[in-house]
Length: 446
Image 1 (tube, rainbow, N blue to C red):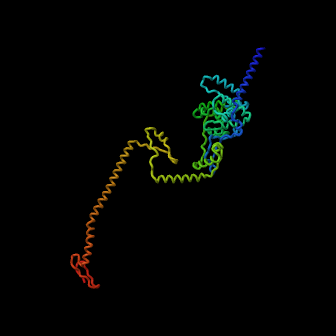
Image 2: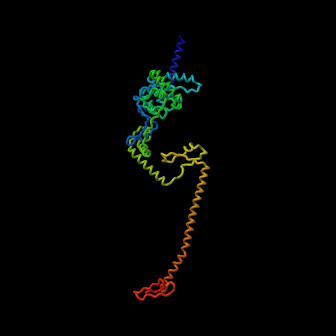
Image 3: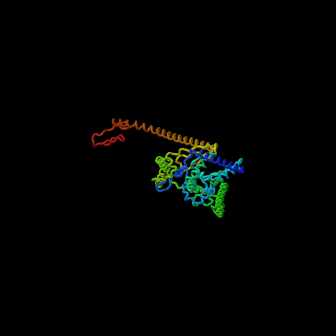
């Protein structure tokens, strides 16, 4: 009897000591924690979109590409998939699942000395506390702070608000923040179009998206998806027939359709600067603004075509300026060398190409060009020599005639003044206007 009393006293003392220790830990680490009440007004960062005058998209600005969907609009099979994978007791625990903690401790003790990653027991509430209020530091101190904040969050918010924060905040790979963005990026579907197998795959990603990449780690991704489907079946969230169909479903990725964007880069950059000046970068990249501009896409295309055509015509009028770059093919293969060349600004839609000329051919071509140039110069000089020769000869032939002309004319004038004929005889001058004298043959004619 005395032994039992002693045993009970020891148990009570240990319980009191443990409770005191827990209270001290909570008091010590609970000092200076972030204010969890800020989550009440939290709005997740969303994408700012700039539209043309006709409503078509011009640009998107975001730090994290996210499509916010209220938890009330998220299909229940998507919610159940995440609960089965991450926190099946979500609706019953107070923020920390003590049974999961005990199970994780036992598993980790059994795995000591092995290369296996320690098993966690974080609830969805704890993950919300870590993602929003703490860091990813791996330490006991962070886990204690995480648990304290989880209790406070559960006390301040209902379960649906916590789910809303979690499902719209988590990163799921492929640049996807939140389940709505992940559904588009992985399967090109909205949330209500996802199958059980697709929802299970998304629920398999929060722990380590890269470890379950659908292409690079396909086998691991399928195994993890199938495990989530099995958990959903155990929890009674789906029927056995639905589970079989989901297991048999191939895991195929369908990337989101490319968004049609009107290209007006300089105009859009000016709009971005103005928005940044008016609202600041935080509002621009996280505020989810919707901006309508005055740009007319049809007139923009016409203006760009006209400007480009004018620049091309101007460029061609000034001749070819040689290649963009010279590449040494001995240093690297042609594809690597071509890829490393920076295209000139404004070269689109043209692409760079390479023309490889062997050195021997280049030398032969140089010799041919030099020979052709020399032959051309000789031909020009020969033609000039012929012209000079012909001109000189013609001048020499013309000199006697010119001498005769310039010498004979003054002599004839002098003879006419003296009244002599060309043979030296004196001519009879007319005595009246009715008489005339012809001196053509030296004889006077009445």
